Image (cartoon, rainbow, N blue to C red; front, side, top):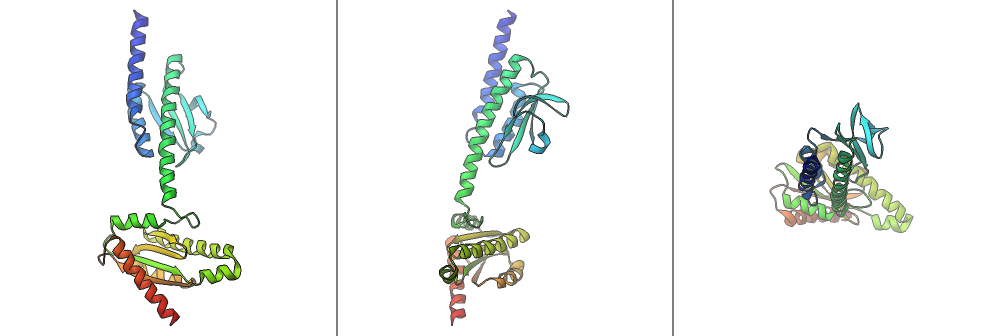
Length: 258
C-alpha cells in the first residue's frame, strides 16, 4: 500500500509539473521566468526558484546539487540570450533520489522554454536593429510611429551629406566609421532625454526626442555634415509624419546647396 501511495503522489506531481510547464512555449522570456517562480511550489511544496546573477552564483555547479548561502538546492546555468542567469531551486529535500529526478526534469523544461523565448526575442531585436550602428532600423521607427508620438515630442529626420564622396575618396571603412560616430551621437541624445534613435538605411537617420531637447540636439549635430527636418506630434500620423519630416529635411538640403 505505501508503494502505491508513493506512486500516486509521484504521478500527481508529474501532472502538476506538466501543468506548470505546459504554458512555457509562447510567452516572453520574463513571463516564462515569472510563471516558473509562481508554479514551482505546486511541484515542490515549500521550495522556491531563485534567479541569480552569474557573479552571485560563483562556485555553484553548472548543473546539479549545490548550496547557495547555506541553502541546499538544485542549480543550473542559463547563458542567454537575452541575459545570463543562474537558476537555483531552493529545495531542502532535493537530495532524495525522487526529488532530485523531479528537480532535474523541472529545470530541463524551464531551460528549454527560456532558450526558446530568449532566441525569439533576440531574433525580433535583430530584425529591428541596424547592424552597423546598433540603432533601431526603419522597421523599428515605423512601429514607433504607429504607436504615436507623445505630446511634446518631435521627429527629426537627418541625412548625412557627402557620404558617397567620402566613400569614393577614403573608402567605405571611413564612411562606416562616420556612420557609427553619428549613430553614437544620436544614441547619446536619445538616452539623455528618454528618446529613440534610428538608422533608416544608407545615410538617413531619425531621432524622436522631447521638443525641449531640440536645441541641444541641433547643437550636437553641428559636428556632423547633416541636413535635417523636424515634424511635431500632432502634425501627422505614421508614414505621413515621416514624409513631412523627410520633405523638410530635403528642403534644408537644397537650401544648403543653393
